[in-house]
Amino acid sequence: MDGVESYITVTVVIIGAVGVMIIILNSLHAVVSNRRMYRMMLTCGIDKTKARNPNELLDIDMQDVRRRCRRCPATETCDRWLNGETVPGNDFCPNAARFMAAAEARQCRVTYDPAKRPGRRLDS
Image 1 (cartoon, rainbow, N blue to C red):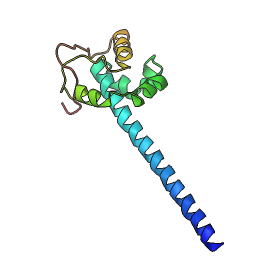
Image 2: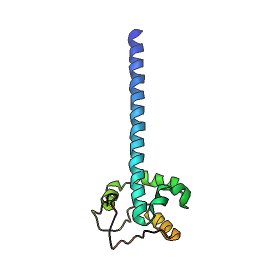
Image 3: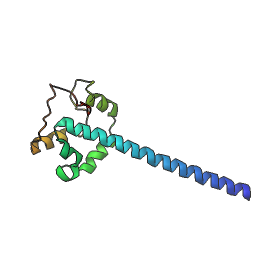
């Protein structure tokens, strides 16, 4: 019986470790996704104050926006676009139209001009 109990213990520990790793990876993905979403909001014309507190300051379903961003298949394109490495517009982003509409409706300080720059670096 001691052999079987040790196998069960090892199995439970392995399952627990895998579960913790999945939780950590999902958390990291959420952090990266939220940072990308924040940068896209800034680029689309939403000012920093509203982009930092979108739940309170924007009339957008942020739960849906976050879900779309986390499930987006174009994350590499988004990163390149936000870093100014590509010239085309941000049609790849499922949330860009919402962000630009919110920026126009709120008359934010920053305006989106696709002819001037494709994206905005946070370090500039």
